[in-house]
Every structure is written in C-alpha cells, then in structure tokens.
Image (cartoon, rainbow, N blue to C red; front, side):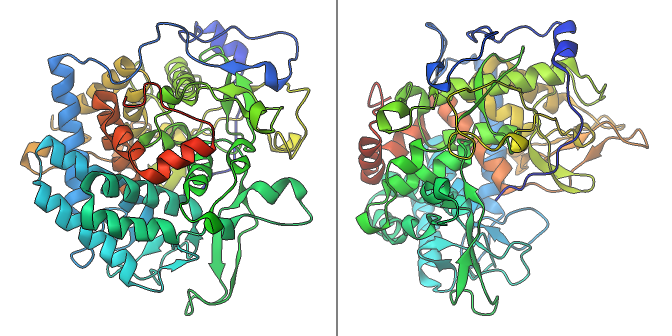
Length: 515
C-alpha cells in the first residue's frame, strides 16, 4: 500500500491568490459562513465535457504511444514462473496491486492489437492459476502485498502483511479479466473473488465504536515463517473517502458470498472532509494524504461520472456532502495544477505543464509528495465519526524537493484532457545534456515510455531521473488513458455480475447503463 510521509511547510492561500490562481471551471465560490456538510453538493456544472473524449489525431497518437510504453512494461517485465509483473524494474518482488493493473491492461493490449487474444488469455490464465495454486499467499482470501517470483509471500519484503488495498487493486483487475475473457478465465477469477472474505477485515474494536464499520488496512502474521498461521488485524483503518478507501469498501460490498460481504454502510460511512482552495473550489479531500494518486486509483475501474451524484444521507449518513466523485477528482487535479504553476517554493522542475505531486521514487527513496486545500468548517460533523479529530486535519504541503512523476498529471486525462496531454508532451520533450530524451524510451522499439520520476532541483544542477519504473504508476496511466479514449475498462468491469449486484446494494446506477 502507499505510505504517507510527515507533513511540513504550509502554502498560504493569500499567496496563491496574489499570484493570480483563479477558480477552476465549474467550481463554486467559497462560502464565508460555516455550513453543514450535508448542504454541500459536489457535481459538475451543466455542459462540463465528460469522457470518453474526442481527441485530435496528434493527441491520439501521443496517447497511444504512452499507453504502449506502459503496456510494454506490464507485459514484458514479469516473472517467467507466474506471468505476474514485477513491482519495479530493480527488484524480483511482485506487488499484487501491480498485478491488478496488469490484468486490466491485458485486455487493452488485445483490443489495441499489441498482443493476440490467445496470448492475453494464456497470460491471464497463468496469473490466476498461480495465485490460486499457492496456499500460503493469502489469508481470509485476501493476498499478501508482496509475493516472490513463484507466487509465495516474499521473505525479504519490507511490508509482510496481507493488504486490503493491494488485494482490492488485484481483485479489480481479476474482475476486469474475468468479464473480458469469460469461460475458463472467468471461472478462475470468480473462484478468487468468491474466496475473498472482506468481513474478516472489518475492524471491530469495542473501544472505538465509530470504527466498527471500517476495514482494517491489513493483517499481519505473528511469525513470518508461518504466514497463514496466527496473527492479527492492523489497528489502522480505511476511514476516509479517498480513492483507495472507496475501492476497498466498494469491492467488499460487491462480494458475491453473503457471509464475506460488507454492508453498504461500510461505503457511505467513509468520512468526507471538506476543503476549498482558489485553484479548485470546494471538494472532499483526504486529510492523511494530498498525493494526486489518491484522487484517481478507483477511477481506473469505477465509472463515477456515469454514476452521478451520490446521496449518503439516504443511507443513514446525514453529515456527508453529496458527491460526484469524477467531478471531485477533477477539482483535486485543478488544485495540483494551480499550486504547481504558482510555484511558491520556486522549484525549477515546476511550470505551466509540469505539475502534480504524488507517490513515486525520489533521490532518497520512495516518497509521497502532496498538496491539500484549506479545511472548511463542518458544524454538523462529529470528530471521529464524520471527520477525523481536529489535530489530524493538516493542510501542509509536502514538496520533497520538487520531484514530479509523469504518471500523476498524465492520469488526470480522464478528468480534463488538455492540461494532462500538455504535461505528457512537456515530459516527453525534456532532454539531457546530449540532447537525448530525459524521461522517455521509445515504445515502438520495446521501450517502456516514461521513467518513473525526475527533478531539476539538484545540488549539482544536473537533472535527477529515477532509474526504475513502478508497476502501480505505469498501470493507472495505461488504464485511465483508455477510459478517457473509450471507457473500455469501465464498461468491462461493470459487466461483471458481482459489480452489477454491488451497485444495486449501494443504490447506484450507471447513466446511461452501457456508457
């Protein structure tokens, strides 16, 4: 799972206003007087362009190349034993989250003609059989975050836990592959889906009654040598309505086995903290991380723009804003653009087309950079139940020296194409001292597209570029470009009976259903 760094220096709203950052299109003005959370409705203005979008020939060509680079990594950098993509270029460990993106990208590769349907079927079958055949790689039907090249828990992984979010990302991919290939692939995939006991991860600490409806981040074995033996749930829970949190709860509600299923309240009870900023207007934000990936992971599979504006009040949660999550993420992307363009810290890396702070590699290791809005008062919200405790609501940005990852801005193409495509072009245009591409390897000759991250703000004055690619960064860029172009992953995921039934339990419906 992604980890969140400590926060540091704040960005003052008056500074951004003085630098001329205006409200994002369709974002309402800030309200001077406190309002109850239930009075807020976050939804797009009439006429807001929505996916799938129409692209020029030049933009289509660029997006095709970017997707192909991501796909090349997900297809070729995989274990020969299991077919599962490696977590990163420099390690032999497999993240099951990366495999979820991989399983969703395989049908894209078939549809785009990069592989044959038979090749796609064979790889998907190898992956699913490898997951099923190993008995020590999961607990209560959910998977250890990191596996070795043979599909067992990786003995040297820095995080030796059964992870609910990484399992959710895996199962989202399993569902997509199952719905696309049908037949034997569907049988294998559905066996995995039916075995996932989400109820076993529902945190039931009597000392924290508000947390009884939340899912634990995971389960840890008491002894690494006995990975499926005694152990316990992690006390941290998915309590707030970020993308990872919603995806975990959504798939729990979708569980086909009633005994394994989460109640719809596990989804609608997720806290919705409200914030505002001159660059974005009002939106729900995640107090524990302002990294951009927390606004688009679930959108890889869940067609939020077609689901419209939800109504948590109708599901027993009165102190919750009504939200169209597609629009909410569009505003979060606008926040990142506006702050990076204003560039209050004066980073050389930031600019008109260089923006979006997220989780990625940095010069000192894995980092999670982030930007947050200013908190809005929510008079009807109870601490712990409806919003985090006051001392947890931190709005400080985390810069990590201005490191940017191309996948972050690029993945927002599904919300607002023009600035995302301009960012992808900018990253593609950067060169080193020899005039060679700084961040790009040509997919037409087998390259994997963009490197993971970079910064121009170094002590030597020479650009720093990450030497690795990372599966959970390549994956969303591939999937979200496809959704922006065709809605293909959304449509395929939504065809699965478990998803259709889960949407029904949540009182949600795609409009139009086949979009």
